[in-house]
Length: 333
Image (spheres, helix red, strand yellow):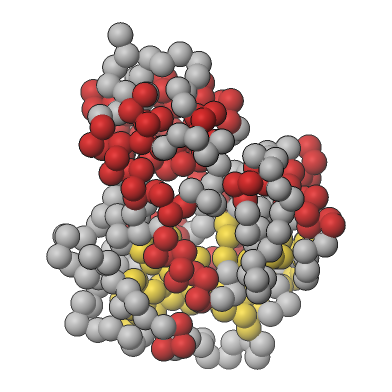
């Protein structure tokens, strides 16, 4: 008899310290995900996840897959609705991964339901400094949910900083933003098999508008508590240790198409040029789900949207040293 999800949460929470996030279990490849995530949650559903293939083909709703695996219908519907805006960006098994993380509270809210921001709710639209838990003071800003990018001033520049810098942005949950500020980037907790390599990367965009759009799409996954971490990089992508190994695509070339295709399809050996880099820069894939399913070749947005991914400890260290501030987006109703 299959144990239901509700009876599995206690077991899963007690073992969470051993597995980190469930990306550690589900993030390897589709077949490993099918085999291991039910076992990790104490759900005896065999070696296959019912409905996952149909979900991948666009013929089944996410809540149907979760119900077939033992989750109660109400929770399954809620999580399916919360993650619906991300379906075009991720593979089916990655959405199931996110649903499990949401249900386990990995990105759970850190504020009371009626609290619009974690710090200084009396300030909106201006930078302030705030230190938490004895850490260093960090520049922060509270933003209205519908703020226009043009109305967001850049964070204060450090004295004596580089003359030419590049601001980049990473949209995430408030809880994750605090973790990045306190402990640094942990790219191993990211998703595998995205645009730039099979191994996890830490992705940022040089366009604030794109980060705000992603934050709005991700509010269900983030418990409506969305943040944007801001970094101020040297424009030539160097750090204190000198130049890095950077793979750059200024346009959607054939090589960009080839490498993003094998990345989205989790072809490990064929992604070495990306996974061995410190950073990768290039256009976002506009149709990742269709590329993953083999139905289309990668194409770019119109106009192209650029992104940068850190793929190594060296790249992570460069971003950690470049932390410039955190934007908190007001909870949407």
